[in-house]
Amino acid sequence: MFVKFALRTAAVLLVVGTQAASAADGPLPFVDELRVGASTPANGDFQVLFSPVPAIGLPYDRNLTWLFTPRPMAGMSVSLNGKTSIAYGGLTWTLPIYGRFFAEVSVGGLVHNQNLNQTYGDRPSPLSTRILFRESIAIGYRIDDYWRVVAFADHGSNGDLGYRNASLNHYGVMIGRKLSPTPDKPSQVDSDLAGFSWSGPYAGFGVALARGNYNLLSPTPTDVTRTSNSVMLGAQAGYNVMVGRAVLGGEIDYSVQGLSGSANVTTTDTAYSVSSFWLATARGRLGTEVAIPYLSNRTLIYATGGAAISRIGNGYCQNASVQCYIRPSMDIGGGWSDQGKVRAGWTAGGGFEVPLARRVTGKVEYLYVDFGQLSFSNATGTNQISLSEHILRTGMNFKFD
Image 1 (spheres, one colour):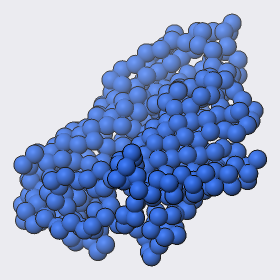
Image 2 (cartoon, rainbow, N blue to C red):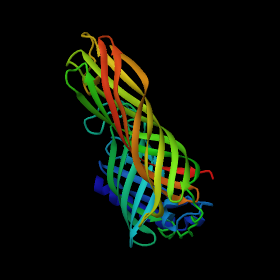
Image 3 (cartoon, helix red, strand yellow):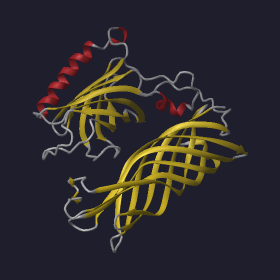
Image 4 (cartoon, helix red, strand yellow):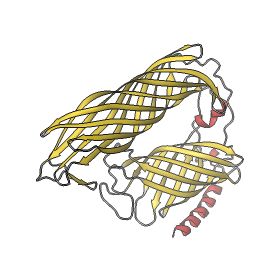
């Protein structure tokens, strides 16, 4: 069935693509490319890529033209055996690699039709949220000005921002038909970054991957270590002063996250947990502008550090007649006593930032966050924990000067 579907859809695309070759001047003026294909596990895939979004009025480095001309896209992956199907949308960036080869990265979201909070033996489950984040990567080959073939992998999950985080993954191949023979690499735009300066106020947004490390210190006689991973979504604002090639500044940020960990004190009646669902930092930044080959002649490399704040939640259950937490698949809330406190810690790290346009920069940074040892009172005494985070994030800033 899988092979038959791939052959049939390829034939349909051939007919549709040929008939729509003049669509740029006809009924589909905003459609740039149509794709069909197949993916595991036994899914049929269809995707529409729309005309690139132009970077109107933005002077930028001509080597980054591909970054400023993403294509909006929408698609679906339909299960051919009655399992989980998805519909999705987002933005796709196409980067020429060498000759006829190119790479693609897509980000966006998806909606699925699987029953929530139900365990299946034949697919990833249980899913706890209807809408998931979606990311994909692909390698493609241009057969000619119109036709191309793309091998892709995509991933959908809630990033631990919802309860449970089962993921939907697909691997497959699609055949694409462009509706006009536009080049994969957009026309180059002259660079206009001569007047760029790091000085002044800015604000922006970011996305990150966070790994939380919990040490549950008491009332167990030995340490219990738990880890938790989460996507982070946040925003930041700051101010820089440039002295020569040195840059001194300050930044504040706020992010939502979904870190949590739990452990059994005994096998039947006592358990406790810890969680952190948001994080704010206030940091100083000290860096210098350097030239890095193949990246930017004006790269800012910086170190950063300061204060971190979060609401740390603690749950404790001690009741011999109530099951608290026996195994990961059984979480019965009866008997839990929950509390939380806003706690302060410290953070340090570093990163690099590059100008993408006259008033736009992009950055990648790493932060280590430590809240030290925390104490919570419960019915039987004191519950002690420690929490730290490793954060890798990327984002964009927009200058106001």
